[in-house]
Image 1: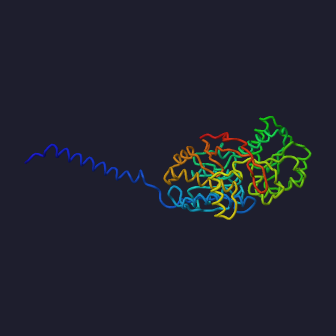
Image 2: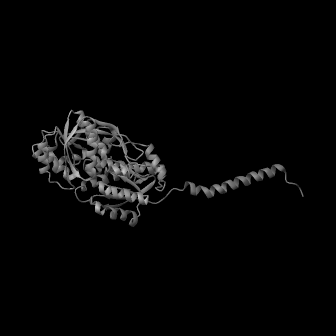
Length: 398
């Protein structure tokens, strides 16, 4: 029997090693590189009725616009929408969000406008592990004590525009102020942010007024404002409530006292407020007349798609979709990879119509807060009230 040459043995062993390695790779590769297929179900929990209905529509429009611009896909997967009208009713919030989580089995939650409803959504997201992106509600706790690796915000914390308004008012030289707001989380927190900055800069609050949400009987409170004789007034209302407040403020003869507010006082409401809003000063992360290439392109696309002008709510919806896209691109469409999703967003710079912003460790935007003045039917930017303002995220442990 002729012995096998040593070189042939060595060659055969090498081939076997290669075949073994290839077989192992064939087994492992599908597991390591498999990309989820099928549609991503996005649960839109927004107000379709009630005081904030128009705001919910704008958020939905903005979100869908970005998805359309990406060919209907984010992270390589088609997007399917499931909608629930939250009615801005905190009492129904847990039932509504659980419909999306348990009945519809959505992959991602998007919502909402009302802070009380959003708090219920954050609680449900923490319990279920579902991804949540909040496209408006500013409740500080969402990126404070309720913060989590799967919870994000594309808008603001209530503290941010309130704090910026306090800085802007103090910078204008006003020494005394009255505050007026709805008595609920957003109102309380915006006033708290305002007071922190205004008092830090030497200002004094001479009157604090509030009324239950969504009450719009302002006359008695405006009489108290007049009696207190502040040098300026800070107010927070939104939607239909903001329309009536600004009109009632003018009707009460108070326009001689400068009116400041967070941007929601005049955003999406100027058509209805008319001349009564002229001169109102607000702070927000968006404004008319930014005149940047990104904002101009966004406005053009939005008008073409929806036959109306966009506002801050549309921008926040658009950016919620941008944020979802960044996270899904990093995870190749896998919503289960929450650590990778979060890391990608924290490392990203979002190119927004509002201007570029980053995401804090607590998952809230770090962004410029503009000082705007109502001129005609626009919130014209007159300067930056606070540059790259980051929420303090008090109570966040993550």
